[in-house]
Image (tube, rainbow, N blue to C red; front, side, top):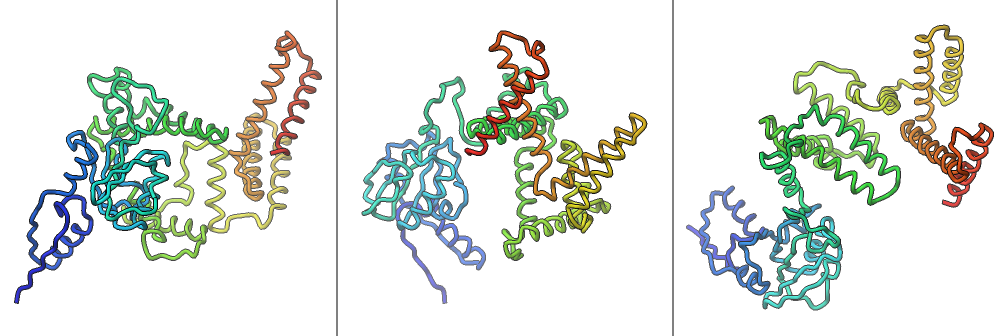
Length: 419
C-alpha cells in the first residue's frame, strides 16, 4: 500500500532550505519518489521588503549551513540572505560564524515573518522580542569598511574577487610586466615577501602584519594564475590538495583517532601518515631529514634537522654534554691551520650552538634575528648621535662609539624590564 506525505511550507521549498535538501537526499537514497510543487516564494516578499534587486547579485543560504560552519560559506563581495532562523539559539550561532568574516559593526537587516525590517549592527543582532522564523540580509563587506580610496575597477574583499584582480593583471589588457612573469622570475619575490611577513610579526605591528600577508598572498595567487595561463593547474587544484592533506593528516580532528591532547602524539602521527603517503605513491624510503626545505636559512635548517633527529632518540643525555661539545668545537677552530679547516670548524660550532639553543627552549633563528635587530637599533643610535653633533660616524673614536653603544643598551634593558 502506497503512502503519500504532504509537506507544506512558506515559499518555494527549493530555495535556501537546508531541511528540504536533507529530506530530498534521504528520499533519493531510499528510492522514494518526491514531487515538488512550487509556490510564490516568501523570498520574493522578503526581497521586496528589503528593496533588493536579485539581478544585482545575491547569495541565498539556509541558517543551518551557516550556523554549522566555522567560516561563513559566503562571498563577502556579494550580498547574502540567510533564511529560516527559527530560534534565538540559531541566530546566535549564525552571528558567531559571521563575525569570523565581518566586523562587529557591520550593518545588517533582520526581516520578520510579517516582513518588518530592522537594521542593526552584527554585534547587536540578538535582541529580546524577536519573532521567528526570520531572515537576515547581509550587505557586502566593503559597505562597512571606511577610509577606502575609490579606484577604477573597484575594491574587493573576497578571495574570488582578488583572483579576478590578479587574472586581469595577467590578461592581454592588463600589465605588460605581470604578463612576462614566470614561476622562476618570481622565485626571489616569494622568498622576500615571506621574510617581510616574518619581520612584520617580529615588529609586533598588526597593521604591518596585515599588509605583508597581503603581499605574500599576491605571490601565491599570481603563481596560481601563471599556472592557469600555462595549463599546468588552477587555484582549485591547490586548495583541494592542501585541504585534502590537512584533513588526512589530522585524523584526531576529522576522524576517530584520539591523541588525548598530546601534541607530541600529533607530530608522531603526522610523520607516520607522511611516510604512508610516500609509500602509497611508490616513492623510495627517504631520510627523516628529507622533508626539511633546502631553501631554509641555515640556522632554521640546522634546527629542523636537530628536531627531527631527536624524534628517534638521537640526542645528548643532558645540556652539559652539548656545552662540552661546543667547547670542543671551539678548540678545533683555534687549532685549525687552513682557511678550509676554519670554515669547517666554524660550521660545527654554529651547529652545536643550534642544538644547545634547543635544549634551552630557544629557536636559534629567532634569537639571531632578535640580536640583529638589537644591533641595528644600537648602531643606528650611534649614527644618529653623531649627526646630532654635526659629525660623521667615522669621526667618532672607538671609545666614543662604545660609550654610545652602552648608553642605548642600558636604555633598551630598562625598557625591557618595564615591559
